[in-house]
Structure formats: structure tokens, C-alpha cells
Image (cartoon, rainbow, N blue to C red; front, side):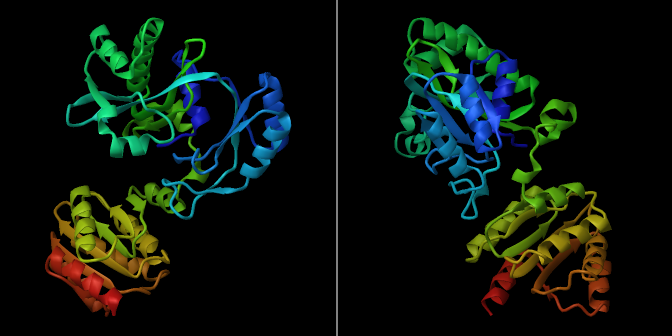
Length: 384
């Protein structure tokens, strides 16, 4: 689960991590009042959306007067911000965060993530933080280092500080920062925490200038405070609806809708579609203990997506029964007719019963015996 930058900074502050002073604003007048309360003569107006790359898209604006703050807030609020992470549709800005400006001497990149290969939390750091970190990763990978951490110690924090080029008091500060971030990451059940940039100010202080926090969905049941930060307006309505039925659904940019059981099989299905020359319109894993109502909802999601030109159903029935998939389809078409070709591969538990239900209903679907054939048919019917 994603949260906004200003919310991530509230979490950082609760663990005594230094962040710039700031206030949230929903109107341009509130933005001016926020700047006035912060004092000083330099402010930053930041669009609050669930996407990175805001700076390059014009979503972060430095202001040297209250008039500039008002103008920046007016320009951002209600606008649609398009970044590499939003896709072409972009995201509408409904709130801005007003921060005090800082005297920045150096910018760094620092993130924590669950490192499944090392089976621990890893720190990823770079002395070249800021808006161009993606280019650094692509063109200067030697400037990015990963440090698997199983137990925080001065040796590890010292190696990271040395890689970042920190000296003197900044090394001691960094040691304390790493320990706080590790504690935050573990206690908050984070999946990812990113400070980009982490800055060293002219006065020698390490400050988290920007922050991105992603919570582990599987642990939200014990993170009530973080769940309360959820902003449904930033999430895809289809994904929200799917989650209510226990479906793992992610909207993508292709035109072949997929219904699969099991994440591995879903990824294989998506890869096969790509190999055949088309792209999947979604990732949809109905899971193992799926019910008829859940399958019905899954078909409704696929049939109502205007981008879907064909639906590929790839079910390898173990715990999942093929007749439940068939019953779900029959229920779905009562309100959402099959307006696009449907390719069915039902193999495993009750496959004959499932196929019979669909054939007896007189539904015009394409049948396939394996994934390769199913993907080929789906791509072919789109071409026709």
C-alpha cells in the first residue's frame, strides 16, 4: 500500500528522523497560509500524488515569495501530472505540500527494501541522489551500492557512509539515521522506504528531503495507523473492487484480459502473450480458494474494460475447480455480455464438468489444450 510523501514524513518524524517543516494544503489560500506559518523567504510547493518523477514533470516548484507560492499552488491543484510512473493518463493533483526551503550542500540516494535473494533488509545507497537517479542506475551503476543488513553495526554504517563520501560529524549522524530507518522499516512492516534525496545541509545536518513509503499489504492487519493513511482516490477503482472479492488484480496497458489461478501461472501467461506479439491488459490471479461470486466479479471486470479486445482464461485446476470458473462466467454474462472473444483453457479438477456447463449454455468460446495454443488463439482473434 502506498501513502503520500507528507504521510511518509509523519512516520519518519515519529522515529526521530529529521525532515523539513511543512504543511498540507488543499487550496491556494491554504498554501499561502502554510508558507506564512513556516516563515522564511524560500518555500517548496510539492504535488501530492502516488507516483515518482514529480520534479521532472513540474510537480515540485521552488518559490521565493508568497505570490509565487500562490501561483504554484494554483497551477498544480486540479492539474493532471504525467510522470514515467503514472502512465499517459497521469494523476490529478488534489493536494499540495508546502515545505521550508533548505540550504542544500549535497544530495544522496538511500532506500531500504526486502531483499529476497539475501533474505534480509538491504540498504541501497548512492552519492548521486536526486531527480536523475534512474539515469545514474542505467549509465553509472558503479555509483549505486547495495548493503544487505541482518544486524545493524558501526562497521556496516561506516561502509555506507564511506561510499557516500561522508566525513566527520556526518558519519556519526548517518550511523544514527541508519539505525532509526531500520527500526522504522521493521516495526512499520514496510516493503520499501526511499529517501531521494537525502540531503546534507550547509549547516551539516542530514535531512530526508523527500520520502516514499510502501507498506506490506500482508501486514496491514497490524498497522492500523498506516491503513488510516490510505487514499483511495489515488488507487485504480477496478483494483479496489477486485480486492473486496479477494482477487489479485493489477491494471496494465495491453488489450488481452487474463484470468489465471496462481501468480506464477499468471506471469507465464503474460509472458506468452508478449511472446506472441501482444500485451496483457491486466494481471488477475483468482487464487486458490476462489468462489463463484469472486469469479463472477473477475469476469465483469474483464468484460467492462474498454481496452480488452479478447479474454484469455488459463486455469490449471488443483484446489480451484473448473466448474466454479464456468459457473462464474455464466453468472457474469447475465449483466455483462461477452462482447469480446473468450479463449478458455480449463485443465484439472472438474474440467469436464466446467467445459460441459459452458457448452450446454451455448456460449461461443475458443477452446485450447495448452497455454501456447491459448495465447496464439487470443492474438489471432484480435488480428481478425
